[in-house]
Every structure is written in structure tokens, then in C-alpha cells.
Amino acid sequence: MIFIAGNSRSGTTLMGRILANHSQVFTFSELHFLEETWMPVSDELTLPEPEAVKIYSNLISIQREGYLKKRMPEKYFDEATDAVKSFNGEKMTFASLYKCFLFRETERNQKKIPCEKTPRNVLYIKELSEIYPACKIVCMIRDPKDVLLSQKKKWKRRFLGGAASIPLRESIRARINYHPFIISRLWNVNAQEIEKHKKNQHVMTLSFESLLRNPEKEIRDLCAFLEIPFEAEMLRVQKKGSSSEFDAADKLEIDKKKIGNWK
Image 1: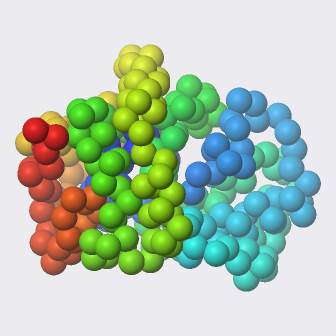
Image 2 (image 1 turned 90 degrees about the vertical axis):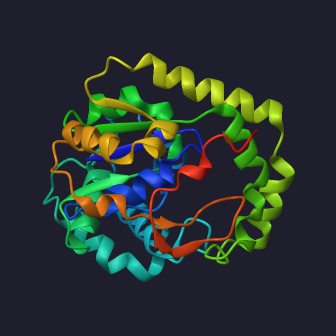
């Protein structure tokens, strides 16, 4: 299992796309499961079957319809029930149910390794590495000045091409919520969390700027950490997701121009 973590607008989505281009890796949408449904401090609570079905069907809805879209978990109750039944009476916890979902959805997409890329995973590095001893956690870190600029312009994403599915209310919320002091504080908290775990064998920290300057070297190093073979296709990433320019999904590259835009 791979978890991508880091401050918002620090390259977590780019890293998800890079890994999604690998023949073995399936990258999920942002699920926000850890902070919204399961606070992974302890994994002792046993889930009753009806609750497990409800949680599982909601995860399917988020993954297949989008986190910001109206959710319709009832569409997936039968599929969720089948997944829960596969436990055959074994103890179900949030951790085991989540792992089951990630691997079954990955298999459904004809791949082997699940990759979950919610940025706020950065707050649960210790818990994830203890609960899932075989997992790998990739932490992205970016110049805070460029993070501030990207967050300031994030509300424009809806109007820059491929993000028209973002609800208008979300663009308004992003515009209203931006404040440089708050964003700076959040960056510091996340950077401190990453620094705490720099010696954790489950964790690799990757600089956004280094990735853009030397993409092949950094991705080869990443593949060595993840114990997967490097594939050249990982370098061919759709150019989209910027908060300052239109998407150009036909251009397959890792765009170096995203460095130092704050200047």
C-alpha cells in the first residue's frame, strides 16, 4: 500500500498521477477517510456488519463519483455487502475494512498496488506505519511561498479547463477561506510532521522542486524506495491541475515552470 501525504498544493496530485502511470499502481481519488471517518489512533473497535456496509458503500461513492459530488452510496450497497461478507466472520475494524476496499478497488481496475493520495495523511504517518507495517508513505514538500501563491489562486481551478466539475460553491469557499497567515501556519504544522518521520523506514520525503528539476532521477529513486521497477511512462504526465494556467492534457510532461512562480 502506498500513501501520499503533504501540504495541499505541494505536488501530491502530481505524484499520484506519476504513480498512476505505473503498470502496477492504481491511484485513488482523495478519499479523506482518515480524518473524516476513521481517526487511526487505535484499531481495537470492531465494526458491526451494517455499519461496515455503510462505510464501504460511501467509500465507493467517493472514489467513483468524486469527493465534491453528491454522494449516492445506496447505489453500491450490494457491492459493499459482498465485500463485507468476504470477511467470513473475522473481526472487522476500520483498518481492515479500509485495506479491503483499497485492494478490491485496485483489483477492479486491473492493478495490484493501491495508492491513496489525500494530503492530510501527513497527520497520520505514525499511525499508518504502525497499523500497516508493509505500507510506504511518500511525503511531498514544496517552497511555502509557492504554496501560498497556489492556494491564493486555487479558487480559479474551476475556470481553467478540466476542472469544470468542481462545484461553484467550492470555488467560492476556496476564495473566502484563503488567508496567508492560516496557510503559513498549516504549512509549518505539516512540515514539522514530515520532519518528525525523516528516519522512519516507511517514509520517503520528496521535494517538489527537485522532482521538477530532475524528474527521471527522482522517480527512479522513488521506485527503488517503493520496490517497483521504474517505467518510462511515469514521466509522461498530463499537464493539468494548475491554479494559474489552463489545462493542456495533450501535453505529457513534468512541467518545470511551476518552480519559483512566487517571484
